Image 1: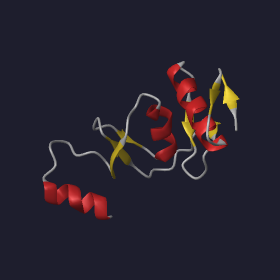
Image 2: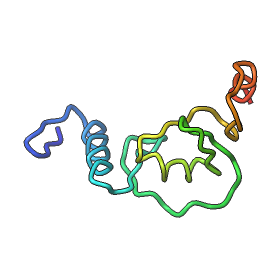
Image 3: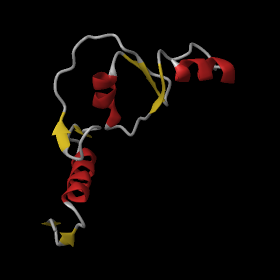
Image 4: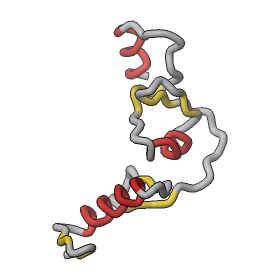
Length: 98
């Protein structure tokens, strides 16, 4: 079992998750790799246009760009560009299905 700062974690996955969160709180730009339970430093993003809207209504050009901002506790609201004004439930559903 991994040990850090006199804390015992049940698994390496839990240990790496906590280390990643602590790094984020200290202002380091880290993200949790969505496909594996380890913390990774962010790399330079490409310019591929695959828009993602976060919960603050900001459209990011792709998932990598979103992950650069994720350290500020942002979350994906829905896939696609953000609506200019309030989305109706049927319009939002359309974005989520695509």
